[in-house]
Image (cartoon, rainbow, N blue to C red; front, side, top):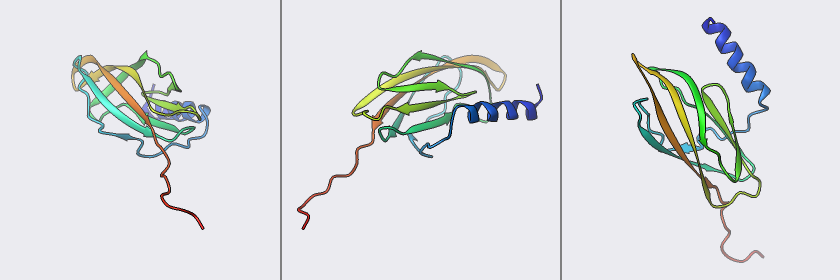
Length: 132
């Protein structure tokens, strides 16, 4: 499949998944994985009822596939091409975790990496003092 057809198919899949209301920087501490059997940890902060879309490909990598090793408990996870979309439950509080396994080729070496993502609920700021 040509790059143009592949890009068009990825866009069609993303559009079918629904409108994006994602926070552009919901992930922090995002370290690159190497597809060498390594395990990395990412953290995400998200408001209850919101969603986050994240790609998993780095510039020197070709992703063959992504698998869910551990599903989230307080939200929903959908794989979208070489990435994912996480939907936080409207009642989500505290933290939870999900785990993905990425398969592909980094430069000339094939392999896999495990990505563990800890999700923390964004809490609204509290107002201190009395309202008059």
